[in-house]
Every structure is written in structure tokens, then in C-alpha cells.
Length: 407
Image (cartoon, rainbow, N blue to C red; front, side, top):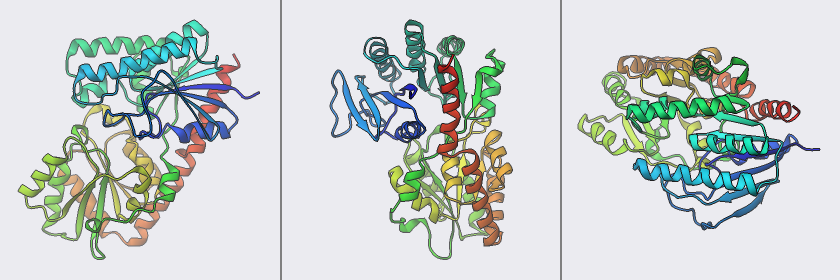
């Protein structure tokens, strides 16, 4: 008989997420019965998506995956109070449905963030005696501090204590990098309770992308280094603009292209204009379904984060997508992410927030023989298939689900 998994996540298709329908669908393909418990889609705008309306309960079935949607307060603006209401309202709905509405599963999977999902999962575990696997994608409160989302020491301390409470009460924890595991062990979580399962990317979207490539991205004689994704405080992209300035005079064919949105876009554009950076272009974001072809048309793909201890223990999610499309990477993130690039041999590593280091790596990539860059891309793709792919990751989750449900 198929084991029943209750997959609790606040972010699910059609919202942008990589632990969404593809994950659930692959679990079904590997023999599990899956019910997804999520909210009515509203991220990132904080508005309910067209085709949906808020009600007490919504049900769908997609490719064998049962999806149950519960009400929540839709908001994702900068107000801490409103964002808190968004998190708490979803957790309260999850708790009510998990206790009184859901069929008893064999195992619960809970996606973090937000922390409130973990609290709800632990309470359901207590009352219904169901094991919980907790998937930590964001190390709270460290990331809240590092990104500036929360600075109050008292609040950060309280969140840390609640995190520890959740960690003690879930049955198993999955993290996205060895560095995350090390941090948890340092905080007192038994090493045997934590597994590293690397994230995957939206493989189907990358493979089926048919988007037209923006004319500003490249011409036949330029070498385009593309940054795709959110441009916020954590990305610290001023350093990349400084690198573009250093490169521009002697290597005018090297172009830095930024595609996406975020709170820093307007300011970064003003900086580029003020500095007269002719080798920098900004392009609006595109849906995930369209990004694959655009990534594939770049000459190299850039990852950059602040030079912060937290980011040295993470692997940015765009890393997997970059590797899967078979392009060389310029990795300007220290620690675990840089280690992956070195192990795979799929690009060059630069020091984050160091314009000279970023510029030097960009020039080195540009000056390399095209066949060498192609080899880097192929090595990255092969490494992704062996270590990061959807099938590999879900199989690892399946082993944990089967072991816990058999106890």
C-alpha cells in the first residue's frame, strides 16, 4: 500500500517555488500518495491569483496530486505586522485542517520558511502521532538579520528559541547544504537527525523554454555575463557594477546583464547611469517558464551574495539552474557554493563584494578558449544530474519517509 505524505508548504504552484508541484508529482511517480496542504496563491504580490478566490477550503487534483488550499491573510509587503499576519493566518488554517480535516498521513513534510509552518506541524504531530520531516531552506534567525528583514535583538532571540523548540520536536531535518547541517549540530541538534539533500531546479521549465532572447542581452561580438533573479540587499550588486567599471575600459566586449526585479533595481540603474556604465544592461524579469532559453544564450552566469557568514553555508537556488543549462558559472559566493563549483569544475570562483576579484574572474572567463568554457558547462550539467536532479533529491526524501513511517 502506498505511504501517505502530507506535504505542508505556504508556497506552491502557481506561485514560484521549486519544492512545489514538480516535487509532489515526482513523489507520486515514485509510489507515494500525496496531499499538499497550502494556501490560496498570492506570492509575491500579496494578491490572490486570477482564477482563485479565498474560501474556507479549496480542492484540486493535478497529475495524481491532491491539493488542499486553506485561507490566509494575503500580504507580502515590507510591514512586519502584515507579513506576520500572513504567516500566522496560514499556520492557524494548517493546524485546524491538519487536526480535524486531513486524513491521517503516514508522514508529514513541512517546508520552512516560515517558522510558523514548523510550529503547526509539530502540534499536528503531537495530537495525531505522525512523524514530521522538516525541510529548512532558510536559516532563521540568521537570514533575517543578514538581509535586514529583522534587526531587533529581542525578537531575533525569541525566534531562535522557537526554532530550537521546533528542531527538538520534529523527527528528522533536511537541509540544503553541509554548512546548514554544521550550524544545526553546533546548536545542539544530533548529527544523525539531519540529512543534506541538495535542491534541484525546475527542469521541465528549463527544457521547454521557448522565450525570445532580449536584444539587449548580447550581440554576436560581445561576451555576456548574466545575473538572473532577485536584486535585493542580500545580493549586494554594487560590487558587480564596480567590477563592470573596472572591466569596461580594457575589455569593452564583456557585458554584465541583469534580468529580474527586486527592491534594489531602481537604485542600481541610477548608479549605472551615474557611472556611465555602457557595458551594463538591466532587463525586466520573465516567468520561470521562459528563463531557460535566456540562460542558455548567455556566455557565463553570475551568482553573487553579500560577504556574510550566513551565505558561506548556503547554496543559492540559481546555482542548480545555472548548472543544469550547461553554462560556465562565475560564483561570487564564499563557502559551500564555491566548493560546489570547484568540485564540479564548472566555472570560476571570485570573492564576494570584491570588485577586483569579480573583474579578474570575468576577464579570465572571457580570455579562455571557447572549448574550455563548453567543457565547464558540460561538467556542470553532469554534476547536476548526479547530485542535484529532481529524481535524485526526491529519492532521498523517499528513503526518509519510508524509514519514519515504518517505525
